Image (tube, rainbow, N blue to C red):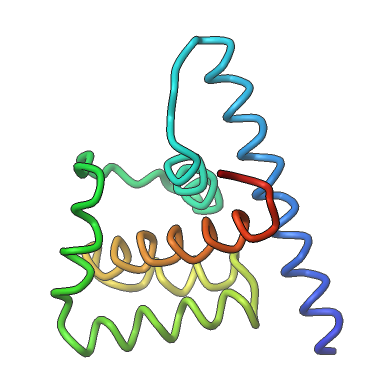
Amino acid sequence: MEQKIAQHIEAEIAELEERIAEKRRNLETENKIISDKDLVSEAITDFSATPRVVPPVAEGSESSYLETLPEEVEQTVAYLVDRVFTKGLAKTIAEAKKLSFLDEDAFHDTLTDKVHAELKKRGLVN
């Protein structure tokens, strides 16, 4: 069972890689530049059924807002991020959609940081 879950998670990561590569190709044909972290963020957003409309945040300012979250929100976000790596991205996103918009946004931003770091470790993004 555990091996099956691990294979599912790896399949989701492979799907994220494909989405990131596709987005990168589309942007290159339009001569647009976007950071790898923003590409990861958009790929994660694609997993959800309804698009999130979030105002742009200045580079580097996300970490400060994440550092000021109430402890209860931090615990919820940490729990959900851990679940991504045990239950899978799609299932965890569905669970996160039950949160308030701000809590879901904090989950999304934290998850983006974690997934970006993992993909960077694997040499798939810069």
